[in-house]
Length: 219
Image 1 (spheres, rainbow, N blue to C red):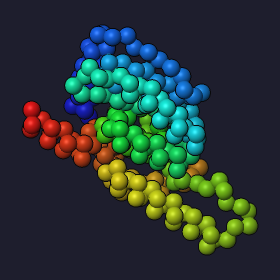
Image 2 (cartoon, rainbow, N blue to C red):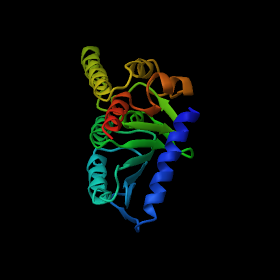
Image 3 (tube, rainbow, N blue to C red):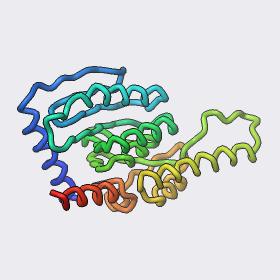
């Protein structure tokens, strides 16, 4: 963990040094999504309940910030998030987008990341959960009182499969899904540092790390 934190602060230090070369700008693109652009990339701040419209907000924030970074040898795009969760499908769409853009995801020490938020954290090519990370089994707000057990099971199985496939695509351990399913929806379980390591929710993503090592081989 200390080595991981050291890497993070080295990145931040490099970023701040480059930022001295130009002025930074900040714009608010949604009620809870802000973006700061500087010479070396984009920093998006996200807090509160995750909703379906937030995917568009994150994309707009990145579009604004992507105009920066032309003077850097390497971009450092990052998302700082503190959220109690929300729309599961939206969280996975946001995560897919962040991963394509190779974002680092940070949970501030003063914040926390729970429920669907964990799926956004999981998508980062580098992950720094400085605040608490909490999980539970997804629940279905669309289930009616008279819905059959068979129908509920079909919905649960479909959601479980969707999350499992998502974790495979972003190279995160399927053990995270097992852990989520073991916690009742109305409860939350705090992940330990050992579990964060085991589920690959902290530090550099192994696939991204391979890419970085390969790039250095050509330098």
